[in-house]
Length: 249
Image (tube, rainbow, N blue to C red; front, side, top):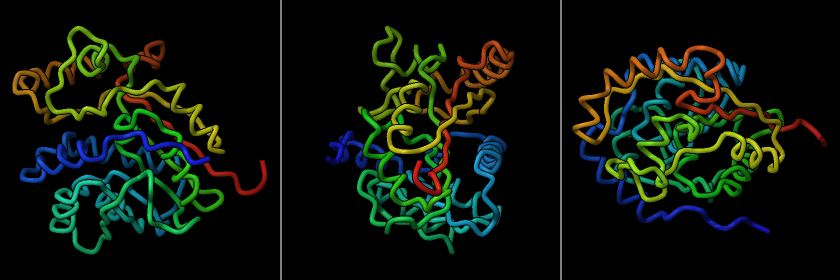
């Protein structure tokens, strides 16, 4: 039985379309964007020329970074405004309006999938995981990265159960993820799954003007406090990655 939809699509579209008038949506520093692509390349071991789906591509930053590494990238996003920005900024890349829970691609169309800050926009992940499984070829790889609920900054600022929660700059669907739950969902979809945790991913923008003033301090504390190995599971971002089996398990 197909899993139910797990996202209020209209609110997502309205939120990200409202960001379409500016480039503020690209929240990471350029060197962080490159580091994220480095991690994708390392975790997937996919060679240049591989076909990659950048699901939830936003304004196309990661799609373009993948293309610059030699990948054949297609970007998909729910927001028409962000897709227009992506098409205007990055010619030569295919950008498509689409819903990750109902992708229009044929089965086994891609060698790799990137889910860059996407999963925490869903209240459940089974349908997304099933679509990623469907569109990947046997042996295909996926990488997802999202805010980690176990990280104190992400919890206090972005989790609705926190007394310090701020709704500025987030959609009603968003919440930091729990690493074990995401891994279990993708395993249930049929993937072989692993998890890494990373901090030191430098922000250059946040929607709250007050929080924006504190970003240099946050970036420094995040880099120093969570670098020891014993702090690994508390780092700011969870990277969930895995492979579609090549044959029967």
